[in-house]
Image (cartoon, rainbow, N blue to C red; front, side, top):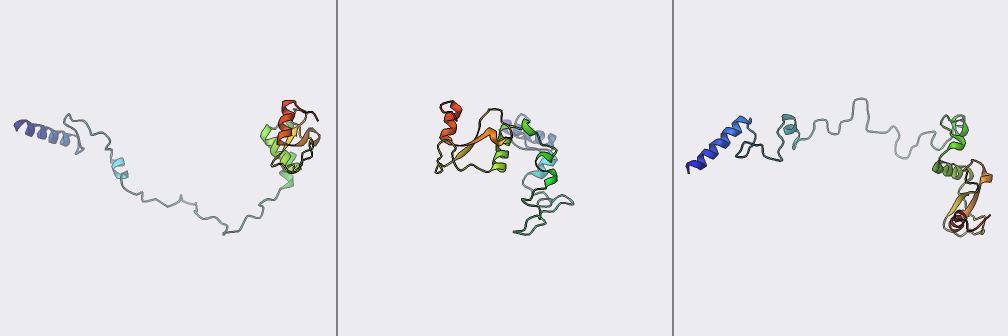
Length: 156
């Protein structure tokens, strides 16, 4: 009985020495609890600034529902295409060039090899392998003809 009271006394002493923080019999902090004053404030409490935006910022847009800016889907000719400072010309990447072909010449809707119009998808296929911004370097093909053309099974 005396040993139990000693261990309880030791725990009380350790608790007092640790500033009221829970400790085990050896005086170590109990795992999983946070003890810094900043963290004690954070646990289970809501920040007083929750839902408040930064000063000068607004949570609302300046457009009402259904309204759009005046320049939506309008091109500015002075800085579009080859006049744009980021224009790369023929040094453009694969994906960007295919996007440019689709925007400039539209999505293909007929295969120029087999003349099919009922296929689910059509591609712009490159003829020379140099990927130039020239319509003469591209051909409209259905998916199966494009695959066979790339594999060398058919010629144009």
